[in-house]
Length: 609
Image 1 (cartoon, helix red, strand yellow):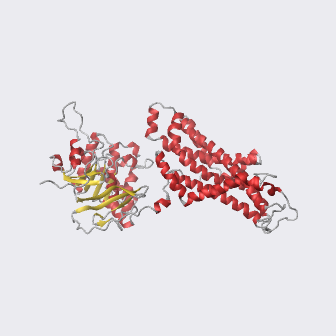
Image 2 (cartoon, rainbow, N blue to C red; image 1 turned 45 degrees about the vertical axis):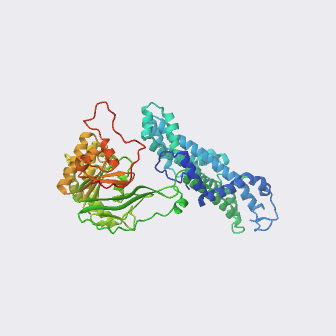
Image 3 (tube, rainbow, N blue to C red; image 1 turned 90 degrees about the vertical axis):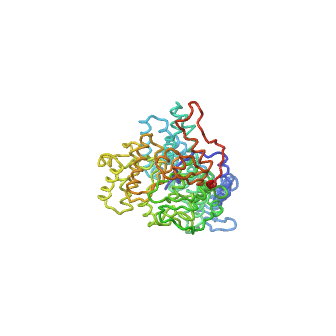
């Protein structure tokens, strides 16, 4: 029997604005689940509030001439062994059953959240003790813990509430600990600590608002589990005692007469199931209203238009050809397109740069080309042809490509991400992580993969690779971690390396080393490189051609020589070039910038002859 949270803690984001929350509530309430939760809640609330007033007397009056009588017009569900109306007793028991479940849930959630938040405000030694104690408590089965507490505290309503409430504490404590820990490491929390904000104030101001929603959802679903647990305790004789009765006690009394009048056992059982389902529906509705994608709205969203295949001839010298790339993001009433209508080619052995401001679609474009865009985003295109193979299937770039295509992309395309510290597992040695690609895509044995891994680490100029391979990522510098990621990409025989701002997180000296390494790989292995950056100076130092992106489109495709010589056609490209600081600037003059509200055309402009 599980009486803890039924919903796992999801990755947390910043709290939504109140307007966004309001926009989510209406679709959630009007969905089939929401309407079911409202209807069930009204029915349950009516019986809880008015059940004893309407049917209370009939539930206690015994008719000795109607012992275990079958259903009749006078008694729709018959009578029990004491001659009391079964329907009246089931409806009357609703109040005690539901209120006890809510009381236990309130106790368990309150104590669990308090215990779960203690590691956030206690010193390290105290926090470790609380976390360890919570883990030990979780090791005990919930039903066993409930029975033990019930026996210790004593049978009856109070004992049952305390037993189930205390049994719920470890589950909610661990949930609160997990949620609080995921928030406590965020930059805004660290900034608050640097500013001297106290731990208790950080908990109330920064942690609690971010973990409130999942706690509410789990509390609602946990109430259903508590109700079932109460029925179980009373059925075993450890819960409600005579003359009081709840659904569990009615189930116990009716079980012995189930072959005489099945309704005596079936009716309270159905009531328990109904109430449990209502609490679950309430939790699901809250989950939708507090941020989960609404299934009904997604089902009725305007269908995504899939582009027709491109019949344009493909350049045989191109390692990558992209036509009509569009990335769609679900919105309230349809789709938005942060990348729309992108066309470009990358020739074999060529180094092409993609520049643009943050949010222009550079990284999304590269992720789509590598088939790394995941739901709810959808990447569609007329054609994305890489190394002689078409990536697009039925107008869409699959987020989980078929095994053959995944093998081709894994061996012939390498992807170097912006922050190598997030790409390497901190719990594993670097060497096995670099060698993994060889074993996964090249079917190499462990020894063969290790030998190739050491060779690739040497190729990217990591000294003493035999020793470095057995170190953890935190023992590497930022530049070494980036080199290790490049080595991982070289485990196959890549025809294209996509480097998504590989030098942004590095200092200037290390930036030069990484760029020089990429240049050497390009020259020695004839590997094409697609380099993403918002720094034109970095791009012009290594690339032969530059793609300029603005608001999700490629607005100019220009050679590096023309870009440096000031022969750019598009006004956005010229604005980017002019914003680069130069040594010729007059001391004290303001830096040239692009005004925040300035707008440029999103179409490619033809050069003026």
